[in-house]
Image 1 (tube, rainbow, N blue to C red):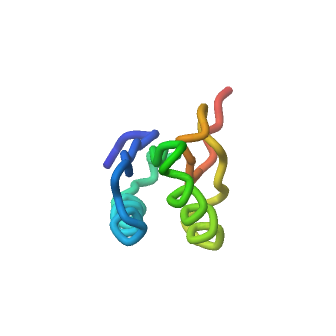
Image 2: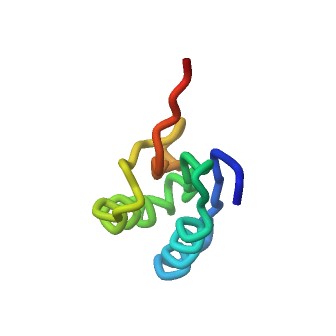
Image 3: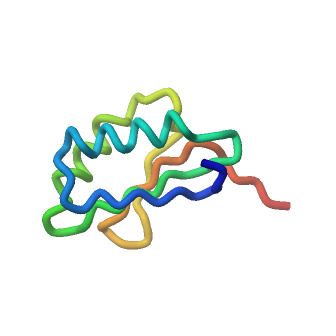
Length: 84
């Protein structure tokens, strides 16, 4: 996984399946991976959003958790992207 921004579609996943997919992406992240963009959906994805925010709050590989461009996306920031 060498992309700086990795998108993971979690639509239709159970919480356990979502955790497995996110953990796998965290394990495969390289030093060039800055963010995991988790697409969980808005209406029926709010349970996943809540789980992501609580489960990964203290994950040492995650610097911070931020909302995406819309309420159906949550972003796990792994590294800062510095631009000059």
